[in-house]
Amino acid sequence: MPGKALQRLTVLGSTGSIGVSTLDVVSRHPERFRVAALTAYSRIDLLLEQCKRFTPDYAVVMDATAARVFEQRVVEAGLQTRVLCGMEALEKVASLPDVDTVMAAIVGIAGLRPTLAAAASGKKVLLANKESLVTAGTLFMNAVREGGARLLPIDSEHNAVFQSLPGDFNGDLDASGVRRILLTASGGPFRTTPLDQLRNVTPDQACAHPNWVMGRKISVDSATMMNKGLEVIEAHWLFSAPAERIEVVIHPESIVHSMVEYVDGSVLAQLGNPDMRTPIAHALAYPERIANGVSFLDLTATGTLRFERPDMLRFPCLALAFEALKAGNGAATVINAANEVAVARFLAGDLGFMDIPRLIEAVLAVTQATATHTLAEVLALDHAARERAQQWAAQTKHPAFAGTHSGLAGS
Image (cartoon, rainbow, N blue to C red; front, side, top):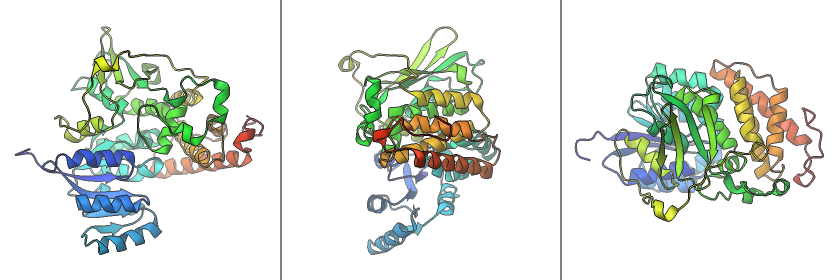
């Protein structure tokens, strides 16, 4: 667009689903965006194609062996992109002086340090790494305030809430007349599966989301609804909302992405087809609107929109997340760490699907969750919870025998 300043962008996690969608939106508006840096863990084939197309100044590969191979391929391709490796490199490209905007899309607590660096550097932070708020909410929000960063949520639910709040919302729900925040959830692939069949769920079944195309970890989180639980904690920090003013509503069609209810009974919602390019484009161009390649919503074709209360017996991970939010004092850091271990072990075939909430509950019961004020304290608590989770998983028999082991908490 003529007269618009070019945004220089770092994409943390460019080979993941959010990163790929971000670059798709960027490619549609070359007059608006210039990619300064891309990062990946080890998917160097896709990263190389991205570098050829967007010619970033920097590319970061976390895996050292993959980084060496990638650097050689960059040279062979005749690219001028500088290849870096390691966590310090991630922090560097997240805080480059000439970068305006950082898409924080690295999955898990691995994204915490570079996302903190972006916030502390005063960037426009497009937050898709929910763990930054779940594990280090106080620390991260302080970095945003002290660094003068602009924080825009990318999760479709939080982006919908952001769009449904007053434009001048300053974190005071009462002053804005907000009664509560309603986060919608699809219910995942097992919303109606008989409970006695859940113990036999396979990783491929858990990753087959009915509406969204996502990575395997977040797909499993959606199936257990831990993803929604983490989003509840994230909403607490983003919108200064206590747990009792956040409600989760099952909405199988994934058309209403979330809602805000006001004290006069009005409910404002953001609707659209389930495609992450919508919140990504919204945040990239905010406060403007840009085309994003998503098909327009046809409500007549959609038909019925259903809403249900979540069954906490079916989705114990959601209940655990609410419990952690109310407990405070690092409990959210503990459940996030335990969940990452549990999901990884489930995807590897070492745990059954219903072992995921059992592991998290056991670790939460035996890990001393203390208030964390520094990055070192957050990482220490995370490490302790992971160790407990690995111990519990090691004591658990094969998924075929789920329910017959003795765990750390006697569960």
